[in-house]
Image (cartoon, rainbow, N blue to C red; front, side):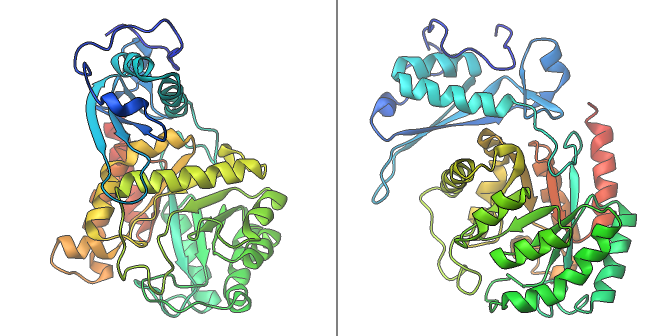
Length: 388
């Protein structure tokens, strides 16, 4: 195929989409239809330098081919979804043959896919970042009670930094399936001493909370990131993030922790999560929170069955089209045991590493993990195999 620029000019004179897309999805120009680009066949970034591909989010990979996904705008009933794999040049030409709206949507996504990411919370994303989990809780699914005492949580966090953590994610409320809510005042009592300790040392600290009041007090205590499993659903959360200037992780969750695993349903899990995150990013932008300040998390295990989790992970590269840093949190999650031999959480490290590395192979920029030393070693090998 001809060389591609960093952002191909979709508005150039259209060529025929003959070839693999000839006759593909004739209904794509109908009102309400959505189109998606998922990069596939990722190559070393050197392919970009040689003019054979475009870069993926400023990382170590480039691509010249994508999966083109089209689905109708129906919210109920049977859903039409068509998929095809094709070179980018054919996809962009096909878009113009369908409609200006389709072509411009594809152009926006390709621009987001190829744009280099700014540092997130002051941390460069040119190598994968490790976000370490510090649960100051009595009932988290994996290590509940291990670090409820602030001094134990501080010792644990110090060990994680020494092992290679880039970010400490400090939370005071368990959000495992079936968990009971925790009052914000109790959350603050648990997390603020730990946040203050590490912020005073200059560590990159994230607060894992869905309560706006905790976000605000944590930012005042020195937290540099808000990690919200509820995707800023607290009415005051977005105003707090905008006012404090705090970068935010916006996560997708269907339902709420107490009932989220009762009966999660999707038309298409990967696309539904994409649409939901896109809408949240638009809300953030309207409030003055730019994409550079946002990391998106598709929420593995939060209102999702095993098949939903797998479908989302297979489509990790799709989420770069949102134009934000991509964070994946799957460490020790239950679906790993269900796919294996029902191992308890602390025995799910191999599966956590395998799935985490697969998302790095699709350009994910942050892994949220319990096992820092092991993840750092795996990252070192991964970096050696995929030089910049």
